[in-house]
Image 1 (cartoon, rainbow, N blue to C red):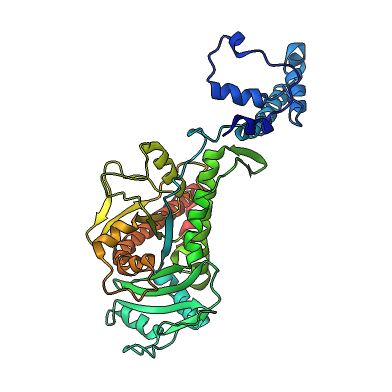
Image 2 (image 1 turned 60 degrees about the vertical axis):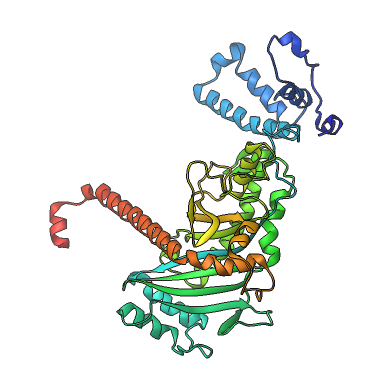
Length: 440
């Protein structure tokens, strides 16, 4: 950043600042420049300087002896509340060339997210919801273009009794304005991010039915995350229950990019919850989600990385903004999905909008994957490499991701049982033995 551009952030001072040499403290040039531009709280003419000076005056000298402890605590909390606004002003004055306060994304690197997969589970307790949803949505239909011309509720009853098939296509939902339909598809006004949604039913044993939903994104939506990733993000001031929180450009980039990714996830989750409410919807628990993320160059399985430009930290920061990370000690790979790595999202703190949602990412280099699988046989998919990879490799992840979703189901069930147990244990002392006998 040109030093002259940073002058627009300079603020007036009540008193001239003493030279740094007279302070006797070694201050880095960058830190000193920022404090030269933006005075510390109480030294300027901003709105928060006046209440801070009043608070400081009340807490010093003979006045502090007459202030109750409760009021001193209240003043200290008020000072902390005002500090956030001063920090927010100072974040704007940080240099755009500093890697500590900015995330650099290589201009020649781009990412595409062509498909998102969700799983909803239907144990016996919520099976009536699946049957009701098939009738309500108009999906309990036979298949005119399939050799199995049987309605969905019949296939569901047969599979749960152990005498039917374990997997079948439930329905394919396409956009209402789409001219080309695929087989037995169903038109609907989908969210603007999605081109079509494929719903498959999978029977797990006899007591658990899973619905695997593949959301195929439109080209504009598939590139939306990349556009947000390359933006120059400015500092943010977030509000949480009337408490301000200041994010510099580094954490603002993480927040905005992951917020864009989260909005795509919850567009899919909300649609599935509204159409097929199952166990996770009933528990108000986000459904397990798997997303395919393809880079133009970045190959996590390769020994070298052309996008790092000799600075590993910059590339790691750019990946952190997306919610993924470089494999360090080990990586989850498979010969069935060559050159792609499976990772679960790990929350990095309060700046991470993805939080603890059960989110997995299958990511890698598009050219590296195409070099292994080749182009033969599937050029009919609009000539789109992203759709080709999604068609040929992503479906191979269904069985593994279904197992992962069942694990999430067991964890959520254990948490629910623990909550019921603890609540019952806490309330047990309120009942007399005679009341328990009457209940029996």
